[in-house]
Amino acid sequence: MSPDPTAPAAPISAPVATGRLRWRIAVLVGAAIAISYLDRQTLPWALSEISKDIPVSNQVKAFLDSAFLVTYGLMYLGGGRLLDTFGTRRGFTAIMLFWSLACASHALAGGYGLGSVFGLSFGVVMLATSRLLLGMGEGGGFPAATRAVAEWFPVNERSMAMGIINAGSAVGTVVAPPLIVWVLTHGGWLGLAPWRWVFLITGGFGLLWTVWWWRRYQPPEDSAAAGRTTLAPLEAAIPLAAILSHRETWAVMLAKCFSDGAWYFYLFWLPKFLLEQFHLDLKTAGAIGWIPYAASGVGCLVGGGFSSWLLRRGVSVNASRKLALGASAALMPWVMLVPQVHSVGWVIFIFSLAFFGQQSWGTLVMILPTDMIPRRAVGTLAGLVGFGGAMGGVMLGQVVGYLRDHGSSFTPVLLIAGSLHVLAFVVICVGIPRIHTLDFTPRTRLSS
Image 1 (cartoon, rainbow, N blue to C red):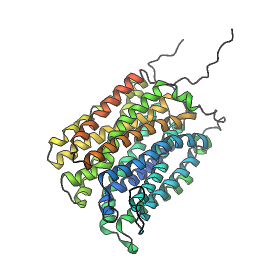
Image 2: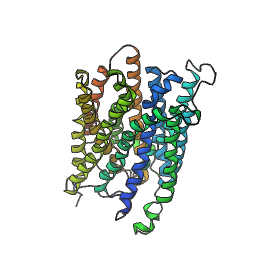
Image 3: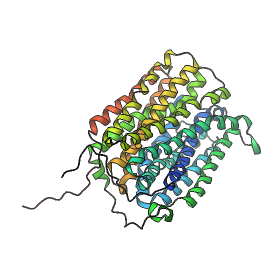
Image 4: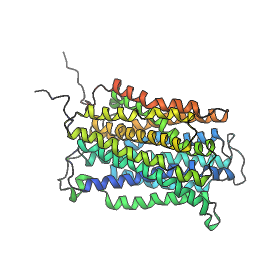
């Protein structure tokens, strides 16, 4: 009898650990994601103070954001391959050490009496170098998270686990505004400018997490607490060309490109939008700027939880993922109303809806690789998907910087951003008619 295509997919990884241990793993990985989002929010929130020492225009800000996103996207792919080669424990350790030191390196940026380089001040070049290195390190974070989920969780729990992990992004971005503003207004220790302490402190958090990770994480096959026997050696890696030969791979990459273009605009430009559009001071912006990010954390849990709830009730993987993705995308066009709203309270409410929908969406898109590909290549596909997302952020970010420096309001970009998730959902529905495990069995030609 042929398998029922509407039935939930079978687990694609090794036997799944039982008990509370796997949920502790989800929290541990979620803490790393929280630190990564805290680190990437340092520049947007500290930029007004950095600009007093290192002048930064809108176009230069877009350049710094793109510096992060380009290497982030490339390392998203490279980090996924690295994790598939060296394993989750060792790979994530190296990744976190690298990005924590890169974050701290922003504190060294300055002119040092040197001239410009390629038309940019030396201080901007140093900031750009640190952003490049930070992106290179953080690019491995979500492939590591996706791989840990594939290692530890059965298919009907993966979206909930990824929701918990992705909620770390909300924790990091909720903590960022008040923490960074507090350091900026109370710092200055040892004669260093407060904005330099922002990067040193956040980089230190990552180093502390690395010690925690190394001591606590073991792959399921090596964990006595998981109560399982040793697994057979992993199969050979699936060639990248074989992964790219499936149209489903391109569909999820393109969908991530569209949706993350909007997400990185919100993530990197919301502080500047609040400060400029409503003429808020730094303390006031920090006091309310965390609210949309808190809503994004709820979205992570609701989106992942809703899909898992459907699966437990016998709904197919295809339907459960797409129903949740469609509901998430439906919340995004509301940001188109922001230019017509003149109350900061209502603007925060609308952005909160968008952040909720985005992170519900983001949780589900990042779980699709575990639905479609064997464990030995999950990191690679997750990396391809993340690369697509980063390139979307680069493209829209450059548009924003150019428009702002040439006198345009935020209205055109908000109209574009509000439509991108709907377009991404159409791409998924057309490009992936049925979410299922893809066939990577080598095809041999029969001799005549």
